[in-house]
Image 1 (spheres, rainbow, N blue to C red):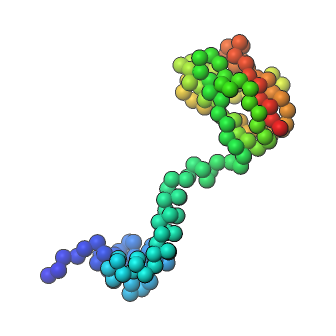
Image 2: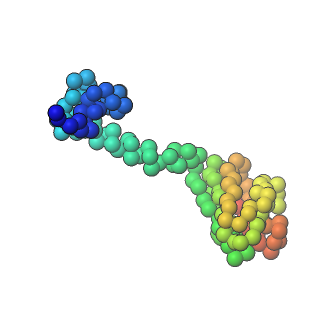
Image 3: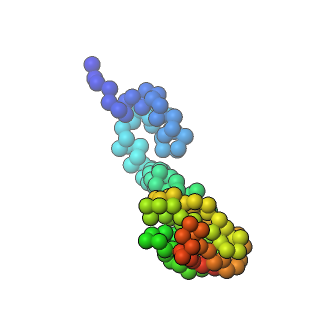
Length: 150
């Protein structure tokens, strides 16, 4: 009696046979052939499928990102870096607190208010209207920065 290998199991109607058929990699009787014969006859399709799998598995975050550019302001050593940042409407600014205590990023012109950003946490803001927004940390008022939205 011959032992059943992985490809025989798929050909016998295993879970993956339907998936490979739907993806267009194989059809009907091709499931019963060895992989070399079915993949060698369709190298372009297989390469496209493989590339799609790799991109989907590695690019989930990029797909979820909003339109525009993402900027990061690091809060560290009791200062905002960069302290002056120019962005466009639709861009995202992320404040990342690397200090061991909380901070805020609060606009003096009511443009935005992060509330408290705990240590090792972030807060994100999407710029929706143009203007110059001086801001500070309300817990440490010597910490100041400026966000310019064009």
